[in-house]
Amino acid sequence: MKRFFEKWYVLFMLMRIAHHNKIRMKFEKKYDDVFDGYGESLEYITLEKCYERDNKLYKKSNELKEYEVARRPQRDDFGLYEYVDQHCGYCEDDYYGTIYTRTPLKNRWLERGFHC
Image (cartoon, rainbow, N blue to C red):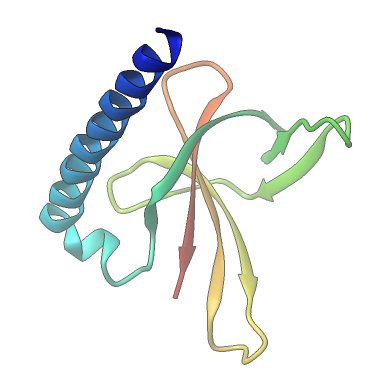
């Protein structure tokens, strides 16, 4: 009986994820001038616990007590407060990294990747 309910739970969650993906794609299409050309990935966006101190952003991990993930805060086109951890690729003409955007929740930051 447990297996039966588990199967339906998995199916329900897959349908829920599909619905959220449809909403995400519609959102990306509406703001394609922001997300399309810059290679921002909303598919893997997560809510992470980060700490801000002295214009630097820190995270904690099991291996390291605390480590720096980005420095020098900035504002994006919408005026959102964020940090960008940018790296340069081998060809030196492609860039990738992580964008951390502050939320109204204490020490909770949205983390998403980008590439261009």
